[in-house]
Length: 438
Image (cartoon, rainbow, N blue to C red):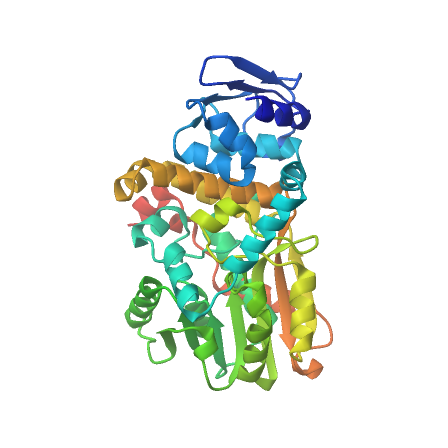
């Protein structure tokens, strides 16, 4: 316990954390049990955790980026009511804004170098490993995603336009995200669009509905593509919106527009040159490509061990410098960059709440350990966007600067037009109103 004790004594400055070790000994950190800034996002009051296994404290302290998640998954770390794992993670990271940097410093330069090397190797996504990695995350039971995503299954950041995010439903925020992205694509009816990493097809179907464009969507998870095709058939647009189980590197032809939403996190830094070179070949001279991805607001880094092992093998969240420098080498011109701050933290908070709401169903699909793993993933990701250095990048690329208007007014105007056309009725996301409507 001495190593964990040493770290927590240094880290906890606001509020109070109480740790009961497996042998019943109690450790108290912090001196202000009632101090808990509202921006933290969790519930106030002293947070009390209990370690149930003799190896728990050492496992957490020695492997902080992996150990805490595994201890919670295995039941070695229990958060006492009324708090939960989200409260604990937000509380600790509020106290240590650079928790990742501090723990890496404590591990020493050799271990830090080893982490970087392992992460770099893990980021080599050849065709076979890329498909395997995609299936690891996106080929989970359909019903799992239905339990915590919006009805359109948007598994990326929602866009909260109001000052009070709590006043906007997840469904509306995801619809607004699609409008915001579509506006930046500067679409015209009849265009051909390539949607790389199309997910469950929601954005591709939205673009066709709003503009009458033909869309080709590609992804590597078989169940995602099967679901996309089912949706296109059900909506009677399978001839205009087509989906293929295909690596983006195997796509041929020419397109007026390219979109990649939540894709670049899975490409791997070593493959950025290939990504930008190939998409450059696929886009027509007057075309536009829009990319939406999670990003670092600081310099390049590497993916933590827990996320690589359990959630996104082969994944990496890029810094803006990496995306811009590599795209320039391939001939792209960057016309617009927007840093989306905090939107994903509110999205992940809602996903977490919906997961908790469906605990029984999820544990029946999988088991209690999977459920705890998923909670830790969502809460850990939220803290990265709330207390950490993560943002979302939306970057607009062109080959020719004349491809888009001179000023950005067209983005706001088109986004407003699309929102007016597709506002989500209240009954769609309120169970009581939906029941009454039916």
